[in-house]
Length: 472
Image 1 (tube, rainbow, N blue to C red):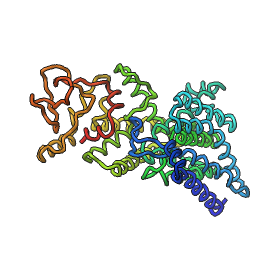
Image 2 (image 1 turned 135 degrees about the vertical axis):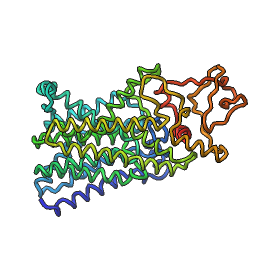
Image 3 (image 1 turned 180 degrees about the vertical axis):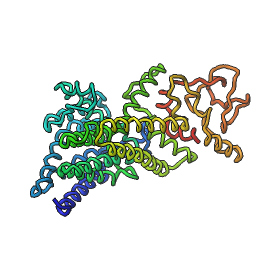
Image 4 (image 1 turned 60 degrees about the horizontal axis):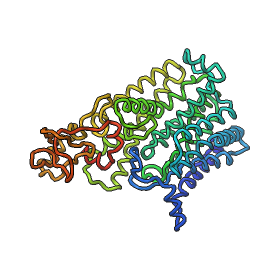
């Protein structure tokens, strides 16, 4: 198979994805505007939202149409491309449950997390049955005993594919992050398949990169279309299944290689579950491990970048900062994928590489959480009120504000409430009341010692504009 037989097909895949993803932007008229409003994701509709305007969240539908065109347009005269077309069609049909339930959540917002989890598991089961893709060995002592059983193999397959599917939905928090992470992993899978002589799988990966690239034309850097839950679930499912196809068709690669390639979204998910469970134990707030929050790594990077500007900020500037967040996480994704590629023939090397990448993640998260006031602490104790202990940048900005006459003062966060008591607290850049303490609003409780709500409640209830004003 020559390049001249492949590039027209890949070009068709790219153009089909660009046209399908951009279709919602062409809705006009009264009926078109009504549908556009129903398909749009409202800004600040959740604590994890970073965008500043309503954006269509049906990118998953465009991905599905792009992959459908790729499967149907595969040249039958080239055996490898014909096999690639069959694989694309089978994967797309298997991924329909995750896509449809995710799209229903995007439109209605009323689908429970449990039902979405079951839909992703149904897609994993369909792919495992139709392509005989089961995790029947792992290369890890002890776990192989479970994978050797039929029920254990099915359980590991459903858990792995569903976990990766939802992991990509979790990191889909800023422009281009989930899409480019998938492109990095898919391109690596294609290169490994090509190096092993598996031309059909390499063609599937190349077509997948072309389709996701068509989505990124609209998603990055301006964020005109979002993946939505349906697109993120389908994209994560697609990446997981291609990883399983690689290790099943090319046994020289360890079974843990797909997990190592997807380590960033998977570890982000596991760490978020652990963090939320620990925060729930440390507080009386009603929260769960699947409740959205604004303490993901990309959220901390965004807020760290926000400290370089003073509020109020224009939506255009906030959108540019959103786009500037993803490249920092792309670098980490490239680092994890590069580590996996270096250890691609050794299970022990893959485990050591994942442990090292976990250390890099935790170190970066710790530094960012200390530098970003909205993050608070991960310990089980109560954190000090936001803004009462500013970082070095906050102290320098406070001194600059004081020299400028205190025109750009900080804002007392709404979660700091005053309890009766004689003590007073002074915050740099906050206007003082007549008693020398913090100025209180009319009808507020007497000024005194501040008390703080739980870390989970603080992270979930502080709006982005207030958090950015506070960081300044």
